[in-house]
Image (cartoon, rainbow, N blue to C red; front, side, top):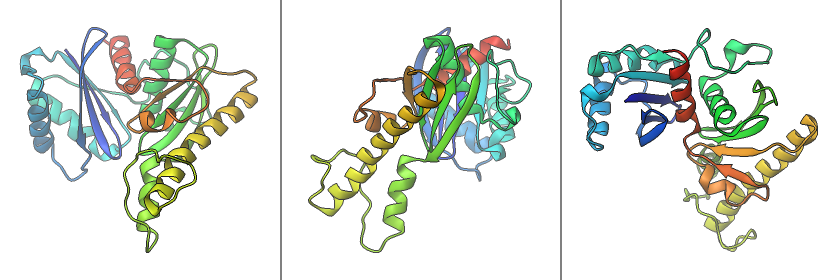
Length: 254
């Protein structure tokens, strides 16, 4: 089994691949204060829920947007499985070109999602990744990443409303019965759910106009299912594109 690890600002996502088959997905909170021993224990406990034997893991690959955890996670994986995890970083074989001003500055999660889109669905494409931040990436007809738009994430906006105001409460990320809210909670839900869906729709229109054609759109990330269901554009939902991209990159480098 190949263990794919996506370290995000809020959550760390684990995926187990047997060939191209994703057998499980698990998540844990990101904490930069944890040591390699603490993460090793967390990974072991989490994977025990899926009856994963330590000896069954033959390799690992890590995507990270939290540099402080890069070495910690590599050490944790080495402690548990005695394998040297591959870190998605400049110089690694991704299978796609990166056409932007500073290729080394492109986040590894962005690269992984674009790799998955290109190899699984084909190019060109527009990928919407809705995590801590909302990212909209474009892959051209030759399979090259050509740019991204980054916006505050869904929960970032929702938490900002509650923490930055005196009378607005914390609410769940559920769609209200109507756009025009009749109570405080529904008013906030309308703005967050329908507002983000409208933003995605509007950005798709702008990107298509700039690119010169209507691009197939794919959505991934923890909050994508809650939002894209309310978008007016046709969007294919694939919640595990970053993990799938990691698995493809692993095979390209072993």
